[in-house]
Image 1 (cartoon, one colour):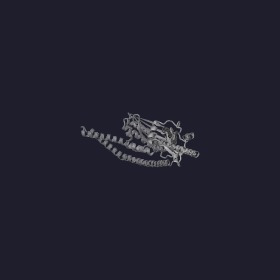
Image 2: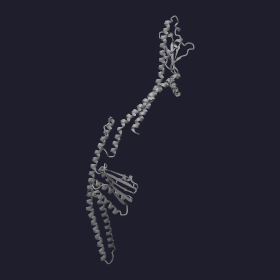
Image 3: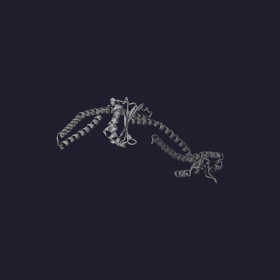
Image 4: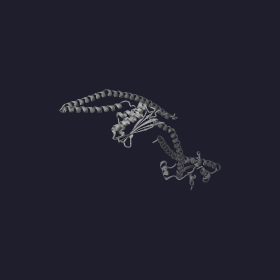
Amino acid sequence: MRLVLQLVARLLVVVALCLGAATIWATIDAYRSVDRATAASAERVSQALEALYWRELLLRSNRTREHLMPVSDWRTIETMKLISPGICVRFEPVGAFENPLCGQSKGIGQPPPLWFAAAVQKLFGTHAAVARSISTRNVTAGTVSAIADPDAAISLAWQHIVDNIHVALLMALAIAFFASLAIAHTLAPAQQIVAALQRMAHGQYRTSLPRFRSMELAMIGQAVGDLGERLAQATEERAVLTRRLLEIRNDERRALARELHDEFGQNLSAILAFASIIEATGAREQAKSNVASDVRSDVAQDARMISQATHRIMACLRDTLNRLRHPPAEELGLEACLVSLVDSWRSQNATQPMIQLDLQGDLADVRGTVAATAYRVAQECLTNSLRHSAAREIVLRIERRTGTENALLIRVEDDGGGDAAKVAQSTGFGLTGIRERVTALGGSLSIARARRGVSVAATIPLAA
């Protein structure tokens, strides 16, 4: 899952938790608001009745204090204005057949759900009544008692919660939206960092990144740049060491070829000469003698067998010397050497497999180390296909790619039905050697499954 989506998902979870906390807070605040409205209504009505009480006391001083407050005087529209919606106020002592005076509760909100009313009733219980004395100096003046109507209180609480939740929900959505945009904008440079790492994975180690505003991303970008620089230096040093090792190996191969030619070649020639002399001497002596000698016949036959074995060894030695000596591709050119290589294999395998040589592009100026490496790759791949598979057809394709690639592609494909995975994991000296050669020149070697066999492809930069 992408990091941006993870952060946005976590942000939404945080917003949901905050919205839930806001809902709980709005519920508690709605319950307390009804209590505050009840206390405020009682306070306002008591202050109004206190003024009415002292007025009656001054104007009608001949009446007893217990009857100074006429019921009809305080139940007025002005008093109704002092009572909050859903709150009922009663004057005590209560007169005969006197009902509480309640504020307007119709149209204060939509009826709440049953579950909400049951939950509020269970969690918070009923609202307590609030009593206020009309006069603090005269307790006989009476008392104002205010209490919330249960149904109206639930409706008021629900309306209060709905109003607050609407505002909180809009704020949560706005925060989530703008925070998501901010997160996406902040993490946008991560795509550039990933692209740089992908380029490094394909060999482009020196990758420049812009300087990011975020300190953390800037540190990551700097670390990626330093890593690419170190990888590039390590690759260059490894290429130099590999070239040096290849030069040493070529020198050793040439020295070994000379030793084999000088020592084994001369000794084999001597053995062949001795065997020929023995065979000729035996034939002459057998011709002079009238009676055939079985012993002399056996000696001549053994000499011929020694000669035949010596010829086979010398042929194998010549093939080994050809492989050990440095290929003439550096001096003669790649195209001519490849044609000669294919012709030599065709002459040795007259029946099958059929070897096709496909040359694409101008190879006339491909010389030097690149030509030698390409020749070695073609030689090794052809040898493996001919010796280790039952291929009927082998295609050797050499393609020169111009433009931005500017590389030489060598591909050998057979229909021998080999296992590409096992070939790729092989630790033989042949594949290891050509892989080292190609890598030393900054190229790449890949082994893949072909339609009916194995395909080996090497890419060598011409600028190497």
